[in-house]
Image 1 (cartoon, rainbow, N blue to C red):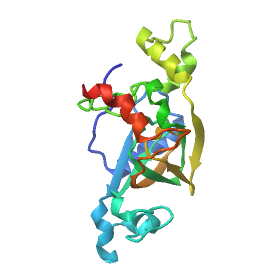
Image 2 (image 1 turned 180 degrees about the vertical axis):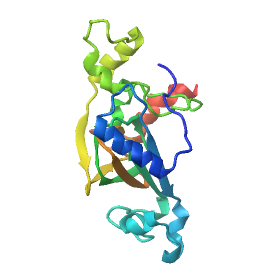
Image 3 (image 1 turned 60 degrees about the vertical axis):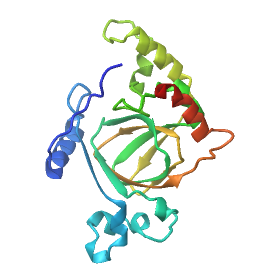
Image 4 (image 1 turned 90 degrees about the vertical axis):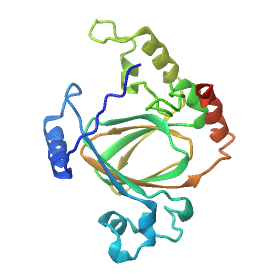
Length: 231
């Protein structure tokens, strides 16, 4: 369904932040370019002395603590802290992560649409490990509501329409994560994320839960879904 519509840029945080403010002020339309900033710290930083910690680790002690906490309950399996800064309209394609994920919204708000592991066959997930979008969906779920539009303004291939109709029946739940809130995303749960305004969110993972859940599935269901891409 096409290559991922993104490129890497050498922007400073200040330049990104100014554009994010502008995007809020003018309600940046979907036809304009949108920008996203990412930063974080590696897993080794938490073992250094506090004076050597960066501001990310200092500001998020529940994530960076080398001892177990409610949010980082398995420190040996932690892979660092990742922080993502989005402007209104920036979307992360539906995907899954193996690690149990704690996501803290620092400022702004993002909408999360989640689906359980057993929904994998309905989500158009890329199953080839060689593909740059492996374990992500190539579908734009924002177009599901446009399926029945027939006024000539929406161009949609037959294949895209077929997949969107399949995905429209996938079990989902939706929530808006606001500043000061933390969302737990279990291992192998799919999530589709849209930034609703200038936002900052940081997350840390606490290892994989392989057993899953009899009602929602887990690692086994996801592996069965993507195994054809390894043939």
